[in-house]
Image (cartoon, rainbow, N blue to C red; front, side, top):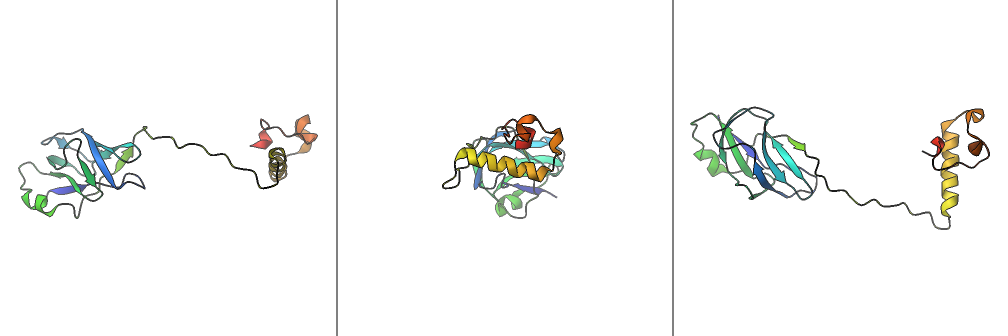
Length: 160
């Protein structure tokens, strides 16, 4: 029996995906876990992985085409199987395909924590270091001289 593959939400904010490249052609035999396509999301490019085995009967969305989450993008089944009814139904009752992440993730800009009102940056670092020192319960005799004198440096293991 032919199974529908729908566009999945490949990122938390994704509303639609673009098939940037099909990795399998219509008529190709596929196994569960095979990569079918590369899908561009709003943030990155993901690989779309098949969770079923069979023959790729139809690529419903062409390369460069977009599909909303839940839309039919492909049909997998047995060679020669009639899929006209599935094409009319569109995107419901799909076989979920598991996406795998690519390494093209866009980096989010780092933000620095702002000091509390009225606190100086040096005081904050000292408070943080003192807190970590007390939480770590390290034997003071084993501490470097700077730590024992209360000068905990950022490079100190206690300043983690």
